[in-house]
Image 1 (cartoon, rainbow, N blue to C red):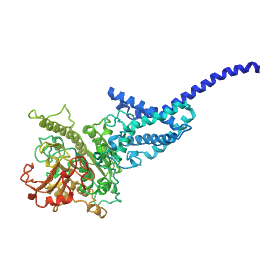
Image 2: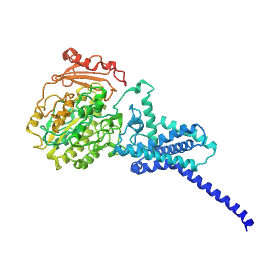
Image 3: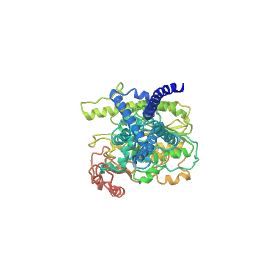
Image 4: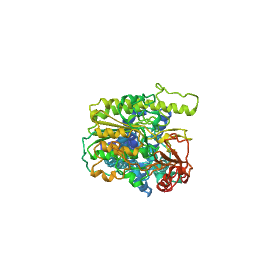
Length: 640
């Protein structure tokens, strides 16, 4: 029987070996496809509803992106697990660095922002090694400390499985190394869909963003040396005990809202685009002379939240405690709700490391939010109305609307403002008015909810705009270009139910009604409303704030610097000025002299009186800034 059985066993061994080889090949194929399947599965679990909105071109681009990165990881796995050759060390380093990083960082970033870390999130950011983690905090909000080791273990497992089951021919392994190098170079240097649609795979978006980040570290031209906001390290405030009953404060920041299209004063009937909130927020305390000290959102936010002038140095502006920090130290819960797309130019760094209890941005409201106008303000209103009552009292919350930003988001079904004549400037202004109108309707819903909430008897609302908007009154449009009144004169008011404010506070607010006031006054005012302004622990920070609480009698004013060039936001368009009411200086573009205006006699700044008419303001401005706009090369940093 043994002699007859031997040939039979030999014949049956061949199919078994073939079956084993077939299973090994299948296992190897599954292992090599695991990065692709993993990325696709995670992405579908996070944003499948958004992906269903992809237009055919975006869907095709996404499919190509998934295929590209899937091929890259498969090639890198094969190249990194070669049994011989020095190049395998290079590819192994690439595998164990890039694969865990992109997988963990994109998971953590999406967890915090509901969007992936793309090129805009790293544009003009200059810090190694935090570049590779997209400058995320390592805390419970991101779970980065948990995701990263888990992703590294997965990379080890994939490498082990590839080495065990993948037995490609030598030529294929060698070509895998070349393919991994070429595809990796393309992914780093090439583009990805990183904003609005993000119709690329998350690993593709990450690798492209890191390529941008590397180029930011070593800019090939002087043009890329401009710095926007970098990651902040806010000074930690020790625990504070409020000097009075702690009241909730809601700071509302409108976008690009100039004073003459909105109704701050509750006395007259409002026929402007802001009439919805005008009716809801009566009575209130208006500040008819409020001015921003910049026409840039980031600079204005820095000033409002810190109380510091924009002329402070880099270290001071990037470490200054914000109102969030003071509030948390006093036992407040904190929240930041915005419809803005805060990925752009480092704007996220203003709030990312504040340890907020709630952080909501445009991508939480709508994944396809526009980079300029953000998500629809009506979505923001829905979110705030639903979540603000859930905040533990006392709370400090910032609600920031964005739709009046160019190109102006309009509700076409409710657009009452039309240009008087066929004129591009008037058409643009009418569209702007309609955007303000739509945004104000959304804000009015928020105010209605606050007024009707159980906490309304303990809540104060502070309202202003980050800056104004120009429509060619001085030869330009939009904002960030000048410090003329159209770009810095903004509406502002404070609202509270009767009995929430003390009589001295009410008297101080009434006295400030027609007095020149500035965004510099808002942080002191809010700290005073929280009962923190007079605390000894706040004194070192109070000494750096040139503003005054509007809840108290105002003292003498020092001249106030106006600038769109700050270490928190290096200027794209150099514009400088200084104001000591009624006199005001302004310079921009190629100016090497200041224009001087008297705002009492010339509120629209039509007549330049010459520097001498503003007394010593010009000398003080030159001493403070140390340069004129003419000294600044466009898109470069000032010579400081």
